[in-house]
Image (cartoon, rainbow, N blue to C red; front, side, top):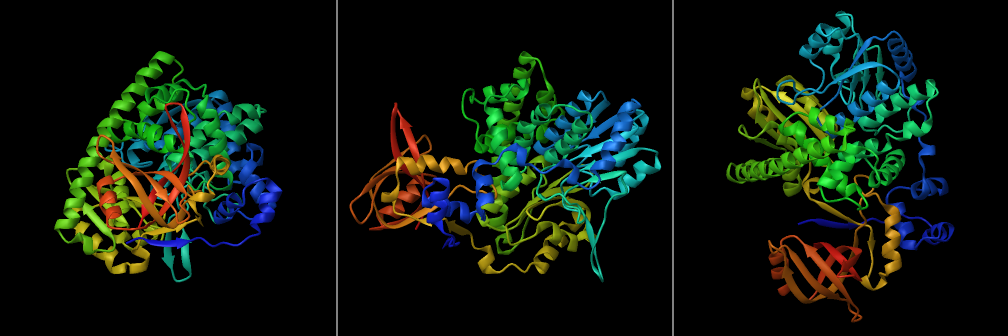
Length: 570
């Protein structure tokens, strides 16, 4: 059973309401997202790209710019080594387009998920040497590759790291000892001595900041710098960064650009997904466009997604977008099959007793492990690792819950792992097959999660009667967008509601429509998406129910009506 709690943060909501011309409910929602003080509220509501911190605040930015200026001037060969997910592909694209604009002799290599694995490896360094490369610039990887970077330096290569992942460390008697690779410049806001205020940038924004600084140094117009905002926004949403402060501004402005994009590849992808002319939201990026970009790196090669983003020919872009759409359809079917197998194993082998789930699916495509782990986490509300059989070792991905720092827990099991890296909420690893069961046991032996922490929590923003709703308030909620991690869609709640005229619709019987009546007799249209029959059975047994909800304007056959979308019920 979920635990419902009310967010009760205090502020003078009437004063904020009057100062900014917003409903007091909106003022409360902003405070619930930890936005306080006149200047921060103003930035949240009306912030622009002019407010983004200077790229020069990033540690080693001056070093990296000086190195790259010299390399470009001397026509040295530069190779960008990216990653095969949405953040890695977009950051590679930003660096490539930026370097080309500066006249650099630059090419790219995005590792193959199966053949190369994540990040920079010995074979990629060897290939760079054979190809006469002078300088490697990483994006969305490199911070955990100290040995590989040392190897590259020994072979005479210059290396600039741009990354955003957690800095590797080892525990010593004096606490954590950070392990920084011996690159010529390391740009990563998570370094302890980095002055950049936002520690939660995605890899593409870090790469963008490098191009931003280089453009400034070379007197290139800021309008050209800001052309990359849409790619930075796609990566920020796709890599599930917190939509707060700078990230929120980037996504807000980037989505505005994306809805009328001049980039042929993005335009083709939008069209292929039947979104032409639509207002592109964070939802579309996270659940429609983003998965298509990711699909090529999962089932084929991420070079195809990079090719789409860089393509200038409309016809070719349309062809590439169609290919990615088809790949994503295949990925969806394979994911569903893997999820069902994982659930069967958990239920039939007693794994559901574990507080940390480690599920080994040897026949599952290794690129789907992270998605399946996410689905399993949603079902069981536990940290989950899904492991698959790779060519040389077992590989896997993990997805966590707020109370469990996945990366730090993996450090404690580091002796069992061949390689690992990631964040508190997500991680990747490789391990020998003989150590899989040991890994599961050690994670659970170390686990300190309590029953309370494992219980899903529904945080209600405002307990609010549906009778308070109005079209004006519902429209005003749009100023809180874009919604996502760190700026979640508001949740309202009311108890003591009667359900009237319940009907079930949908090809899969997954939509329930009804009217909700409160104790004053006021009625409101409502809809529930999910297991509609289960919902209907529950309602039949109750005189009154409690719901969490979100209001929306429903448009049907040209008519607009106010309705609530039920999220949870009890």
